[in-house]
Structure formats: structure tokens, C-alpha cells
Length: 214
Image 1: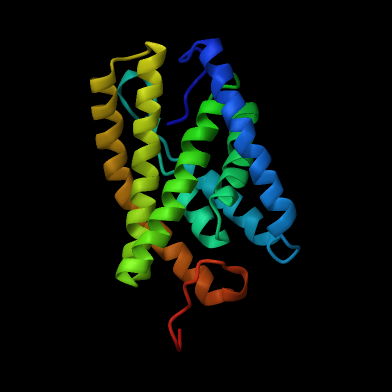
Image 2: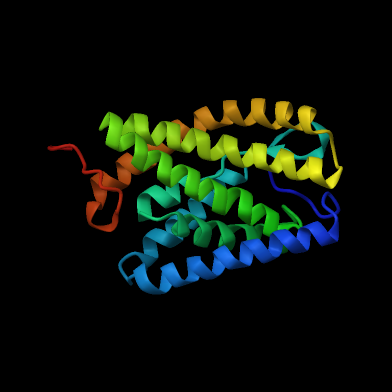
């Protein structure tokens, strides 16, 4: 899902950068207001974990790749979609600059897809489903699944606007791969959230409590 340089024209990349910077500024405001010293280690662990999760890339046709995203995980654990934007931005900057995973000129688009869309879709899907199902595993699974699938579809649309590959073929390729990858992300997200809410519920802002006696 990391878009490389030259896959999007410079002028389109600049537009994505401007949009991304607005959300990054809001994420920095969230960090200043909400990120206490107690939460710093959790943020660091989430960033490292998401970095590791995204390292397992599966090639998708037409030159891009598929992988777990982690936006839902960060947003649910820290109780805000802006937490996902903050963490994913850090991860994507390191990946782009140090490892060449995703381009610099298109970094704005990658932040929008994985941080903004992934964070907002994951967070509000989780909160909405929790209100209806009252089930943490069900809510987390579908939140994480959609937060993997929807950013991939957004990436395909951006590639179509850029003229990199056709819209239908892109949606099919990215959609099928990430619908499957999203199942893995759903189960991984459930496991991680369960472990964290069990070990350190005081650091978590999900509204989900660890089971009694866990």
C-alpha cells in the first residue's frame, strides 16, 4: 500500500501533502494535550509494533504491495483517530527516509491513506459497533478489517487519478488482497488489544475493560 515516488504526478502529490499536513497538525495538537509521560512507552511500543507489522509486504499487481496497516490498533488503544495519524506519520517517515519504503513526494498520500483514513475508519467503526454489539472482539475485528480494506481502495482510486493503472483493475487487485490481509489484521488487533487491556488497563482509552479474573 506504500505508494512509491513517480506513481503520482508531483502536483497531485503536493495536494495530498497539504491535506496530510492539516491532519498532522491536528495530530500534534492531540499529542500535546493527551499524551502523558505514562503513555509515551505505549506510543513507542505501538509505533515499533506497527512498523514491524508493515514490514511483511505481499506484492500486488501493477507495482504496489499489500500489508497490515495498524491504524485501527493505534486509534482504538489510545482512544482517538489522531493517535493513529500521529503514530503512522512517524512510522511512514522512517520507512520512506531510511528504508525507501514509500516515496517522499507521495508521503502525503500514504499518510492520508494509512493514518487518516485508517485511523478514522478504525476508530469510528469500533465505537459504532461497540454501541450495537457490546462485543469487543467483533467490534475490533471489523474495525481493523475495514481500516485495512478502505485505505487500500483509496490508494487504488489515487492511482487511477494519477493515470498509473486503471480504476477497475486497481480496485479489484487492491481490494481482494487487502480483504484477505484484513482478516489477519483483525485477529492480530484483537489479540494485541486484549493483551494490553489485560496487562495495563490504566493506559488504554478504549472503553473496553479486561475480563474479570483475566
